Length: 53
Image 1 (cartoon, rainbow, N blue to C red):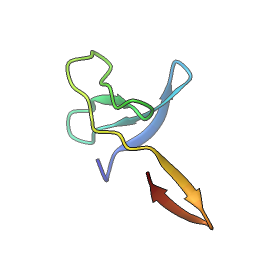
Image 2: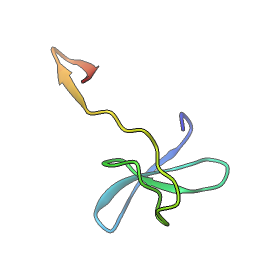
Image 3: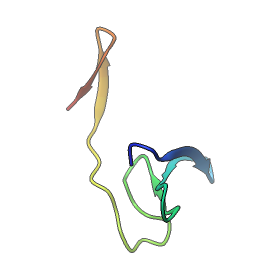
Image 4: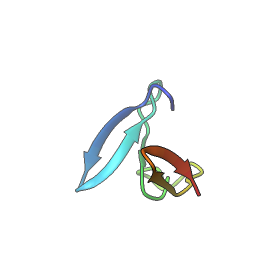
């Protein structure tokens, strides 16, 4: 996913896998067809640095 394309679908931020072009939600990690999902961690920016909760 480090080379994924970032986009929006239906007003929701998404990432597309580079090889198979599967589109996942950035918010919850779910694939468009609900058959797979990615692990999603909440993040925040503190003192200008991204932090994983």
